[in-house]
Image (cartoon, rainbow, N blue to C red):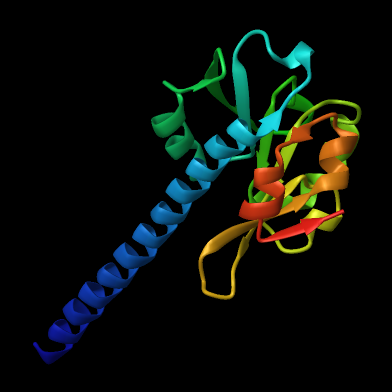
Length: 177
């Protein structure tokens, strides 16, 4: 009987801990989704990207995709309807405006860089160091434990993306040139 109580207590603690972790991850995904949407307001794509749907894509399977679909599918970027896509593999990447590469797919960044060379795609990552490896924006955890982002101005310029000064001067945690 005593052993059963400990097992039950263990599962209660485990489930409580798991629920808190899940909420934390869910909150982070909501915040990242809002940031991604706000990036659309401060970055200007070339004219050839201003027709059809505005496509935000996720490379691989990630828990942010449902949040993106839930929050952004009915939104607009300028006059364009936002569409969320998932690309299971680098070879599936087609024209998109934003490509989000979650931590689990970070090792694919060099292949992505080759696949999207010469395209005006805002590449967003979330693993330390990737801002120096070709990411345009990289989510980071700030000293206070909040989510911030690094902005690589040289890479956005190389991709013919025009970044509003507000994003680079006031909102970014760090700007890399």
